[in-house]
Length: 425
Ligand code: GDP
Ligand code: IMO
Ligand code: MG
Image 1 (cartoon, rainbow, N blue to C red):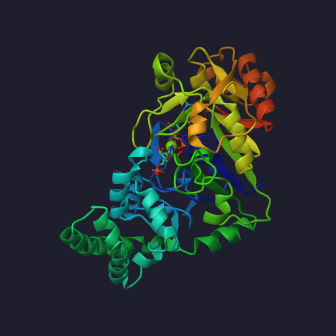
Image 2: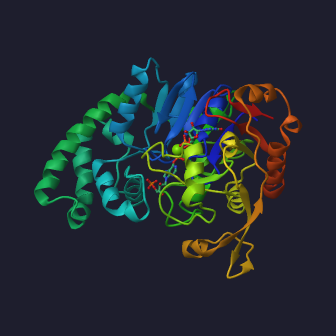
Image 3: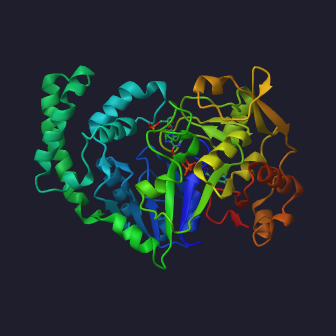
């Protein structure tokens, strides 16, 4: 199938960036469709590490990359990311939807004040999406308009009461802010002009022609605003369905939906995490997997692979196949288990709790897993052209167990952060 949607099947940071980089080689267009600078997608290639927050992870292949309508954009951060990429010798081929919404400094200030209980990334994501839904935010097309300054000043009138009531600004500070931000954002608009276009039309035409489109999700299914562990979620839809709404995927044209999962589980920020590890077991796994956030540098919470939550994510997002990352990390730790069910008050349940306090209470049902064979790079290279049956027993049976439980195949196995550390079955 020529069009593919890549989504996280856990709580984010599954390795979407790495997999999108791998798959981009065979694609014509790479499209981000949700989230904003809260995403941190790492791509490692030829000894260099790239952390993309906005730019789609197809950039290194020089593919046409698109920020779709569903993305919220901090123009300053995106311009810095473009500059950094350009200064490392690359020429970004980037197009931005005129309809994508803007993140303003006041969104970040509100996030800094209110986001603590969720443990947000502090990038202004929630306030930008909520003002979008309240129909009082501006879009990229507004800051590139001839009368951008006027549009920005006018829009800021709509948030004046909020900003003063919330004690984000005094009246004097608000007035200074209106002046400075309208100048600053209008000048960003000037710089954005060459990038802005009708991306929806571009994607639609490519998606229905011979070209292949790769849709890159941010965050993970369990952080979805509607179906995730609310309120400990992000503020956009992270499901594959969001690629249709926010990226321009075309309903009716067959599309491959690939979910990414780590061989274990991680989570950043607050919220329920039934299989979380603590103490030495947690620090060993965190150390083995270098589990520190790509956006905020926070230590990630780590835990056993939660197959029960993974199966829920697969069903909710319509994931058809999985790529599993970090099998090499799992080989470095002892005491591996997988969670195959949840109990509440001593009774096994058959649903994924919608209520976060209930999810906090679940006791996971575990199965022990034999240690994963630790292969050298050379041994992995030998396995590259082989099939699943040639994998060492421990890895083959781990994969088989997961596939049988979640009822979809693992079609890609990632055994290191570099592009070539990937086996496609
Ligand atoms: P994303 O947000 O889903 O793109 O994931 P992140 O980039 O935030 O986090 C994934 C981390 O795991 C990054 O540091 C990747 O370089 C790294 N990574 C991805 N796949 C593998 C793998 O198979 N093995 C190892 N050891 N690291 C991996
Ligand atoms: P990628 O695309 C992991 C988490 C935050 C917080 C919650 C809400 O790299 O997988 P937000 O700033 O979105 O309002 O924060 O969601 N979160 C992520 N966790 N990976 C991400 O993105 C995340 N984006 C947001 O830690 O708990
Ligand atoms: Mg990440």
